[in-house]
Length: 181
Image: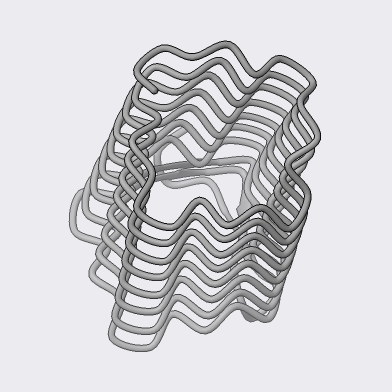
């Protein structure tokens, strides 16, 4: 289904495991609780899509556009989100354990209480992002841009933060860091 147009489609609870949806237009689609494990969504347009509770375990979302998408409670464990646009996305309590978010845009995203343990966020843009109480244990945060981010109560145990740019960011202990402003 390469490049298929599913604008505002109702795919709630749909079983799309392993589907080939590269370049699909799923703008404002209802994918609540959909099963998209190992689906190929490379370059897919998911702007404003509702993926609450969706299972995207090991899905390929390389360079997908998920701007303002609702991914609350979604399972994105092991998913490839390299260079994806997740600007203003709601990822509250999402499971991103071991996900590949290299170079992803997460500007303005809500990641409160999200599980990002062992995720690769190298070079990701985390500006004006809420990571309150997020699990970042063992995450790769090399070269990330943490500008005006909130990390209150986040767990950064064993996180790699070499070359991270931190400006106006509230750290887990509550202190503000302005080192790269």
